[in-house]
Image (cartoon, rainbow, N blue to C red; front, side):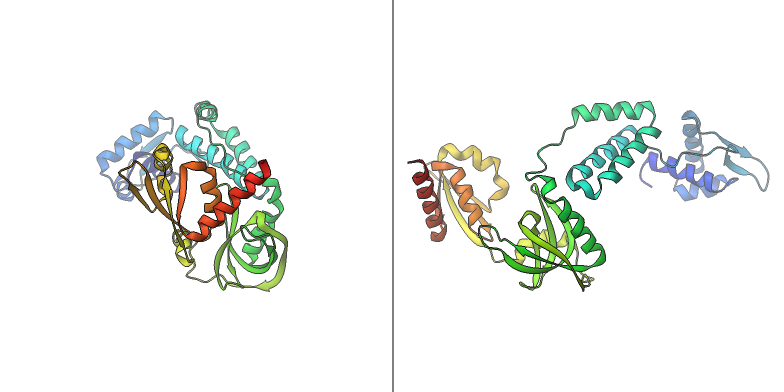
Length: 317
């Protein structure tokens, strides 16, 4: 055991589980010396947890008879972490865990001492997380509940799905594996029977979802975390090269994680490359930078940006 707090809690649980334990046995459980064990006894007494010793062959160390610890003991920092984390769960997943989150918070407030509650009040005013959701949670709330049911029961979902940049929907049948919140959007990671591969489907693009009676099995070697690490490796990627003007150096630096390569030119311009599975989003990204960036390749992206720019000009001319 690596830290003092963990050892103290473990010592309390050992004494509460079984009275009259020998010092050597307790020290062995904790991985410390008997001398260190007595220092831990002193720490327990300082925080109001009474320990006493009985001599004799059947004696040992025990908690005072009748003494029972509450089921949970938190430091101020642990209480804040649980409180803020529970609020974030409610914010992201909404109706899925709203009732559970609020119930947990109510219980915490009822059992936490004044010191922890004071720390929580400070954190609520000083440690702020915002801008998590870009779309309204209410728009996908019912779908989140349906997909959680499908994942738990391992039943397929049939829906109409609109791929990014395309106006028409396509019929899809998917085997949902996990729900994901990323970059302000909700996704379901699922096996697509059309593509015959795992894909991440954005919930706000799913229409007319239906829970089918078809039961599937999640492959035993599927790991959601590994999938997210290698997600784009499973897709064909397009290499995009852009030239930023000197004035855009700050922008290139601020978003350096987007670029696969960065090359500073003698004239002050900056060449960057990135890889994307499609071109619609990069085209919109380029337009958002205005005249400060030029698409070098691929030619298809240059044409797409040019056409979008013409349409914008036509709308305002």
